[in-house]
Amino acid sequence: MENSNIYKRLNWKLIAVLSIIALVRPFMSILGISDAIGKPAASITATILITIVWITAVYIKHDSQPILTLVFVGIGYAILAIIISGILSPILTGHLRGPLTNPFAIISVLATNAIWGLITGLITSSLLKVQAK
Image (tube, rainbow, N blue to C red; front, side, top):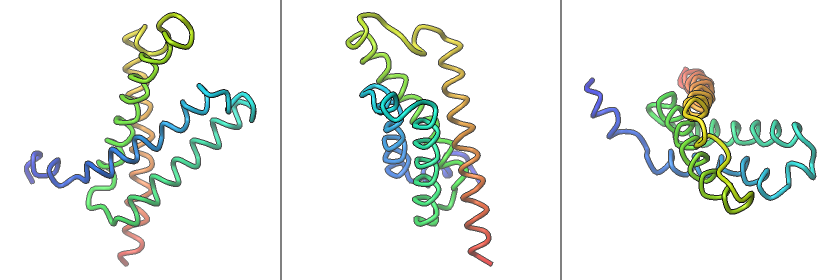
């Protein structure tokens, strides 16, 4: 199958919505919620809940490309988190902080979140295969 057909068949609206939902994590930190709950428990709990939402949403939609969809969700989240960090860090701290200050950090954030999406995609794909039997 031609790559352009695969990309056209992806549910870009779902990808965008799930990427935005994951922004709960950085906003918890920005708003001090993570500190109030206690780190790292707040971050770990948020990550687990986001993962469950991602898997559940793609499973319910019976997405035809769950792995690719969730890899793009992870990348979309990473891009949004980098942008938000670039906008809010100067406002909140007076100077630029975060991944935009280091090109290797940008690559790391993108790779880490793509792997997160890959893992959730593999889980979802497995669940969909089990259901199909």
